Image (cartoon, one colour):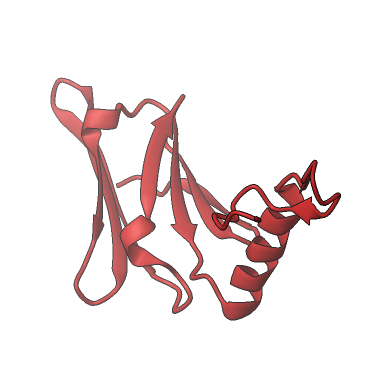
Length: 124
């Protein structure tokens, strides 16, 4: 059995579990989410004609994880499992405010008033 080295990168919008799997190929790794909220990561590969190396890791999914959006990517012997966090009211409010800041304001030529391009009402 093989016990891979792991890191957890915690960020505001998501956590990323990084598992170092040198010598493994993408096809030799499985990432599964159980009905009980456990992330199961397993792998098996041959390293000689008569020997295999395997690993089994289980992680409880955090309560604040948006489970349908969990994703995994295998790059250069490293498995990256992204665990997006649920949007809280404060985070939603912050993204709405950011959208408002990023929308350009237009001036109406006839009235000289500012007009948001997403407004659909016509001024007459």
